[in-house]
Image (tube, rainbow, N blue to C red):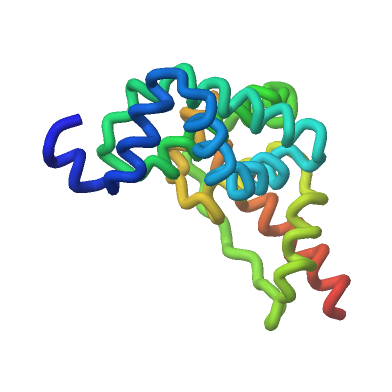
Length: 181
């Protein structure tokens, strides 16, 4: 890592990365413990069940440790790990048969959300979405990826990403309206 990179991550993190590159099991465990809760949450939200979330988390961290020497330091270590974990979760999903790819840009009217949404109720409603809609919704609305990035990650068209996001929002609105009616 060059001096510019060194300024972006602290010395403790640099030492942890160096030890992980050297296959130090204690350092790997430390890194895992530091990020496991946040990364598990992402996996669980995307996959919708604990078994698949644990599998994706484990597979993701195996990939983190295999490729940690390629961490360039351009972004944060956490965001680099998150990208690997999200790809691991996506790999577990069979998303190919769930939608028809639309190769044109689609503009949608934004659904109207109920006022004062409870966070726990919203999380539960998100987990009830169809898999493809849930993944697109989480990647765009929660993780803040662009439609282009999501399309590339999932192997779908940008129009499909947009239509899946719209459909997810529409379903969420319907579910929340019933709860708050």
